[in-house]
Amino acid sequence: MNPRRKSRLSVVLFVLLGVAVASALVLYALRQNIDLFYTPSEVVYGKNDDADQKPEVGQRIRVGGMVVAGTVERDPKSLKVRFDLNDIGPSISVEYEGILPDLFREGQGIVAQGILKDPTLLEASEVLAKHDENYVPPDLEKQMQKVHKPMGVSDLKGESERDRQEKVKEGQ
Image (cartoon, rainbow, N blue to C red):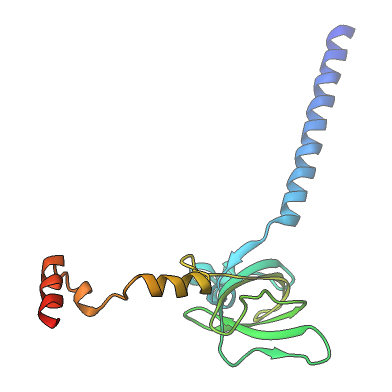
């Protein structure tokens, strides 16, 4: 092999090695920051009821579910809170230290992100409260109730506008 080819080959190998190292570092960084989403049932039973797809203790995950009524326990001397989350199946406990979102309450949907300390306990570093996509501010709701008449049962049965007007005339 002549020296010119040898130097080209070494440059190509050096570039390929650099790309491989950079790719490995990027994949390692992404692996550290990926949080898998689970429901409480999936935490207990595994995804698709497959025990091999259960999150491991110590794994960083996100769990979404409803706060079980009567399970919120607040420490009066600190910001520690403990509550249970469930979906249609079993519950898991969540421990969180910090200020909870304003929309947090029992029966409310939330997403907790943290580290799984044991198979049914999540130590949350962040709690996000879900809200109804049909949210209307209370002031606007009061104004709407004044302006718009509430719907009655007849509105749901498909009664025509003319029939309603005739009933209104008869009632006057």
